[in-house]
Length: 345
Image (cartoon, rainbow, N blue to C red; front, top):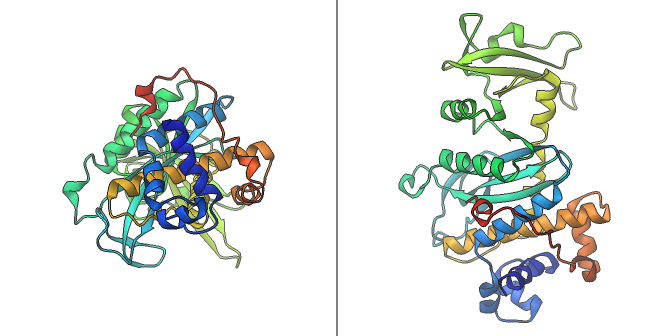
């Protein structure tokens, strides 16, 4: 019963051509808004289903990349939604009333599947962030490594995540991780304290596109990689990465590029699956909706691979045009992983 209820909500999210709030979805499915809300599964149930799909989807992969990133669920027209806060959105350079959603996805470099998500709170609500951002990340990494125990897992995230505590923990637990790092960080190289951007040895020369060196940062042995970029106008710039493992410069660059897949996922779930469109005032309901949206995305990715569509959007359009293609709602093969390992949040 729980399974059919969960898939019912996911199916409506995918097939609905209007907004993804309870009222609009009720019109589409010709039931009451209360009925739609009752069909919304708990976030933990959606997370478990996402993990089962990912285990089946990537069962033949030997190496996977755990992508961590956050995005905003804008709620700028409502100050009555529990848990919303004013967050600075760097894309529009202003504070916006919103939820900040930290999301974990797993990819083989071609397809990304979400695993879980959780809300982060701003500096005005520090007591509400229990557990902390760092604790959530650490707990999830440990669980993902246990679940995908037969695969090599590399953690990838942008410059918002490589704190000293995070890097020290990764080194202590032998976790391969790749992060963007700001060029104003001060490191020790050849017994000299220097800003990352001032290390001449690190900068690519001639036809080189990237270089890697070993440095100390707060007594942590890390690898810095500089990548040369040339934009459409021919302007050259250098961006920097920090990692906890040794590899060729080209491999460091290639691995970090896999992070872009989660940005594409955010675009799809916002524009086509209604991530931001739930109007409930309850924070728990908002998280349940976000988790259901990510589960819907997992099913779309499975459909994309199965039918050989080029993009998730193309798979979604085909599903809306031919409803019988989708349901089939994907049912992963039974896994031997225990329920205690499936619950990662």
